[in-house]
Image (cartoon, rainbow, N blue to C red; front, side, top):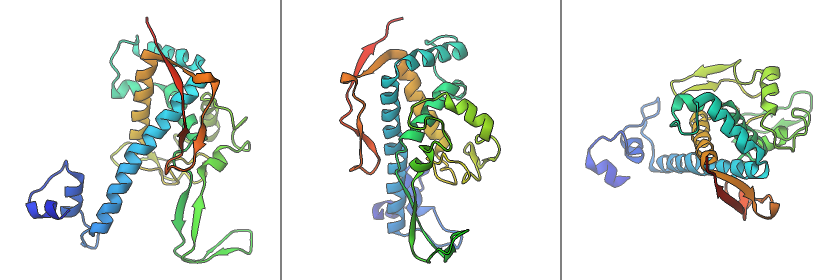
Length: 256
């Protein structure tokens, strides 16, 4: 960080350089080195490990349900015309089944197991005598509501098609959209039982879907996958992101 400050140059492509030389709070205060380091850690963690972990789980679920491979291929053929057409930003957005595979994976295997927040003022719990005191910490576990049969039929089953009915019943995808310039996000999603990106919906959500859908769309064009020994891996809770433990799959190249 010191070397970046000492250069006296501006850079719009070097994130650390930009944080230490160009970023300020509304008060005019520059970011401290500790704050810059924390932002860099968050960027690397959120932008890399969450996507790679979700991609891994998605492919494992597809390997467990091989019929979905052909259905994903048929969706591409129907929308794009063939499996040889290059994938584009606009075409990937139209792949709704691919989108629902990502959503269903995030429902069952959210990469961030819990979200912790510090209480900034005493917080009474409605309908009870409990008060969470200031400076206490609370945590949200998105997987609890996402795996509840109160909200999802046969909640433990991997079923991407459930989202067709869910959207019609809840309008979770279109009733509170707002665009800050980085793609449409949901402004108030606390009522949803599906919160892998948190209540305020991380601004990287549209990019994450684009990234993971591109990986899935590319791989289903090339390979069939199946679980080795028909064994679906357990969760590895010793890692920061909840990754599959000892995953083993068999790849078979597809010829058309």
